[in-house]
Length: 145
Image (cartoon, rainbow, N blue to C red; front, top):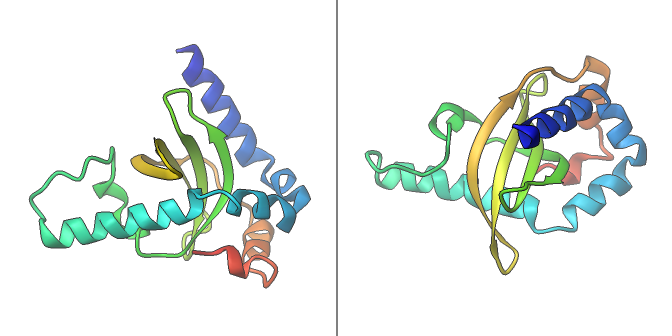
């Protein structure tokens, strides 16, 4: 329970102070995008869609994966990464066309710079309109995958 409380506090703080996350602006995002995680999120999303199309009755193995299927084909921006005590990372993403919502992904580190998507959750809270507009600006456009 202690771990979950810390994670919830961390995520709540990230949402409340999101503009502070971007105090480093593009340089902070560059650090995130220098990791394999953003590309691994896109790979996992694409594989989930492909597996669902080729075998609709098969279980995909992502907690709440089907609930959030609508975000997998959209562009996303990774705005935060934190270690997950169960292995891998928590990734906080904004999704194109749904900037008022924020999603948390658990990506399990399977080695060799590869990650397996284990869960998707929508977080409570949202960005204010000004911050959402900033994310859509030209300085962030190349980070959207």
